[in-house]
Structures are given as structure tokens and as C-alpha cells.
Length: 370
Length: 235
Image (cartoon, rainbow over all chains, first blue to last red; front, side, top):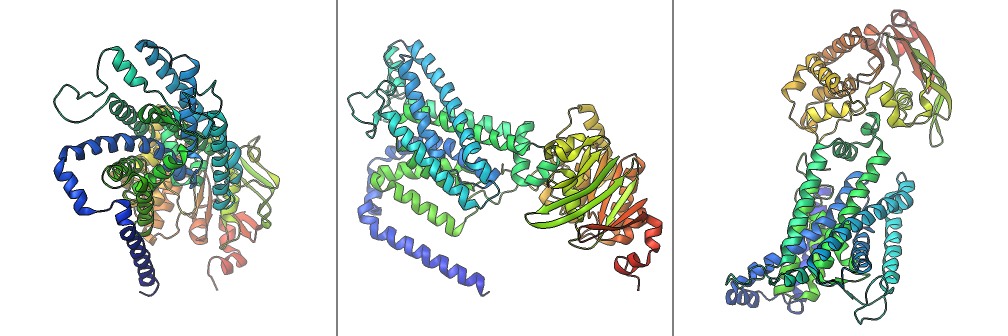
């Protein structure tokens, strides 16, 4: 006993403290159970609505979370700059859409072409940026203490955020729509709504069905794209030679080297894929939430990192599951509690997982880790 | 075929190999015996390119291996069953074996070698879909050797294949080593179990604190008084 029971007591004390703070903040944060129950009873359909919103947001979080989990799985580094790569993805998309005139046209064909181009370029920029960051800021630190690489990651995060701040101030790249300065939130125009309008359709796909729910073209786009990317990634990691090399490197780097696997190239590929996913998530989130902001990578990073830890960091399926769960948590918190406190709930989740199940939901499952 | 000349390897400031010279000829089983920490594993890791020698040369025929990055050494025909086995715990037995053939592209040859490995280790075939991490120690050793054979190496490096195994399994593993050698694979065997190693090897080297202190054919080493006293436990 001794050591183990002492550890447990400490954990329970910390958990009690977290719970106490939660209860203390309860009324402010809207954690009022009878009230919530009443709200659900009054409008049960709303629950489904928040579910839809949660799934769509969760899909975006999952896509970003994959980048955290893949990188952690292979070099055990929490890439703190990852959320900011996603932010750069948003600005890249907006800039491509602006420079190609997609924002000004009403022709649905041109908008779709512009969106496809923006997706391709956002993926390329995200991938290239992430791999460059690895080459410049992490590779030399691979054999030094983990803290060194972590601090380097935080530094890269600052650099990218300030890049975003400068970028946002360039109105010839990022249309200002009346807002001023780089620090303000920019509008990311609702191009999907515009396409629907051009065909005389409602943005809400359930508009004429009599169901009092909103399931918009945006929800559909996010879920389809995210689902396709997750499926593609799974197939890639399970079946291709490079995918197998990535798993082998994650499981035993020395053995992988002995078998002739070029570790540097495998790690670069991991960063390329993670960055590409973050870039794609940038376009998706821009179209979904219709904002672009230099600091948006922070919140997205926090939520995606929590999702990765919740699912079991290093585990690809886990990141997908964790992303959906965090999306739902955030959506229900926004809906029934208090949107200002959503981040606090996400943080509280992170603390509780780290205390009671640091390996995450799927962390101990054999076979899936990549 | 494989020749190390005056190889010096360091871990940071620790001088681990102090001028190792050894030679393995085509078709031989050569063993490197010595106690814990003598530099046996370091020697194999240096040959494999995981550690870079500070001076000296490692040649495979005329090819200077020590100048190649580690991932290219495997492709030149050096494969290893490493200390601690280092199998991939969350990959299936089949995937582990496939990874062994990572540097190869000849599909037919790979399939042939897969059958060969299953012929040598029927247990692996029975457990083909099982995750590597769920195998027993003996099965993991078979998998590590099988994975190395999948590279169809010119020279197979074996690091302590008997470690942690029951006497029956040790016999099985050593019989298999002889069989692999008879099929034409040259072997460099590192062992603490000097008795077993010398019983199957053609020649041997004795390593002590990073230096080769003795070399001879295996039969003569078995009779050597110092070897008997230090490594064979003969009083």
C-alpha cells in the first residue's frame, strides 16, 4: 500500500477541490440543474439542435486534435503551435478567396471552384508550415529534454499568432468589411449560404420539412469533409507502407531505424499530414463559424488538445472520439449553461482526465495507436 | 565479408568501444562473448549505424557502412534481432514480419521468406493475427529473429537471443540459428551464455570493457583457461 494509497488520497483531494470550485462557480456558470431540466422539458428538440451543433464543432476539433495526437504519438511532443497552424489555415483560405475574387462573385460555380482552390492551398500551406516548424524548431531538440522542445513549441506559437495579427491588418489580403486593425475579429463570408441562395434554396436543409430544427448546408459540409478525412487517414495509417512505418516508428524508434525506416522522413510526413488537416480545418471552421481572428488558434488548440488527451493521446481513433465528445460538451455548455464558461468546463475536463485516467478513454486499447 | 577495424564508439564522454577489430567471413557463425557492459550491444548498434563510431571503419566487402545513415545500412544486407527484442507491440505478428521487409520491393521474394520464417517458427504462423505485445517472451524472440530474416540479410546480427528464455526454448532458438546458418546466412552472435554460443559458433571473440582481449576458433576458446574461468563457470 503506502505509496499507492497516498497517491490516491492526493488525487481525491485535488478532485474534491476541482468539484468544489465547479460547485462554487455553478450559479455563475449557469450550472443550475433544475433550470436545465426545465429548459430541456420545455423544448426537447433543442437538445437535438445542440447535438447537431456539437457534432459539427466536434468534427472540426477532432480534425485539429488528430495533428496533436499523431505528433505526440511519434515524438512525444505536445506541439503547442498546432492550433496556430489551424489559424493560419483560416487566414490562408480567406486570402485565397479574396484574391481570386470569390468573395465578390455571385456565380455558384465560381464560388465552388474558389472554395476547392482555397481548400487545396490551405492544406498545402498548413502542411508546409507544420513540416517547416518541425525542421526548424523541433528536430535539433529531438534528443534534448522534452521541456526544451515544449518551450520551443510555445515560442513558435507566439510567432505564428503575431504573424496572424500582422496578416489580419493587411486589408488587401483579408477584407476588412468595416472592421479596423489586425486585432479585431474579421468576417469570413458565408459562401455556402450564398451558393444555396443562388439556387433559391434555404441554408437550412430541413427548412421545408416541418421539423423545427436547423441542419444547415454548413453542418453537412463539415461532417462530410471531416468524416472523409478521418476515413482517409485511417486507411492510410492502417494499410500503406508509409502508414505502417509511422506506426512502427511510434512504437519503437530504434527498431524502426534498424529495419531501414528513414525516421526523419517519417516524422516530417507526420507533421505534413497533421498540418494539412489543420489547414483544411481552417477553411471548414471559417465557413462554419464565419469569423477569422488571429487568436482563434488558442481556443481551438486548447479544445483539440483536450480532445486528444480525452481519447488517449497518441491514439488516432481516440482523438476522433475525444473531438466529438468535447464538441458536444462545448455545445451543451454554450446552450444550457453559459457560453462564457465553456472553456472552463473544457479545462476542468482536462484536469479530471489527467487525474483519473491519464491514458485517456482508448489509451490502453491494444492496436490502434499510431 | 564484414570487417571492423579499430572502431571507437562513445556515449557522450564515455569511451564504450576502445578500438574493436573483428571480422566475419561468408557463411560463418561468429560469436562475441563477454560480460554485462563489456560493449557487445554497443558493437552491434555501431555496425547497424544507430551509433556512429568516432574513428575506425566498418566495411561490408568494399562498402564503408560507417559512412551511411542508419536507415541505409539495413538495405545493404545487415539485419538485427536486437537486445530486448524490440518488436512492435501494437502491430500484429504478420505486420511485424512485413516491417522486416521494409527495405525490400520484391513481392515474390518477400512472400517466399514469409513462408520460410513460418517454416522455422511454426508458432508464429499460429499467432499470425495476434498483437506482438501479447506474445510470450519466447515467441517475441522468434518474432524478432523472424522479422530480421524477412530482410533476407547477408549477415544476421543476434543480440542475446537466449535472454530470459527457458532451457528448452534456448535449445530451440540455438537449433534454429544453426539451421538459418546452414541455409546460407552469415551470423554474428552476441551472447552472455558463452557455453551455448561457443557450442554452435565457428569462431569467437571475447570482449572486455570495450576491447577484444582474445580471439580463436570456438573449440579452442572452449578449452582456454581464462574463458573457462570467466565465462564458462568452470572452476
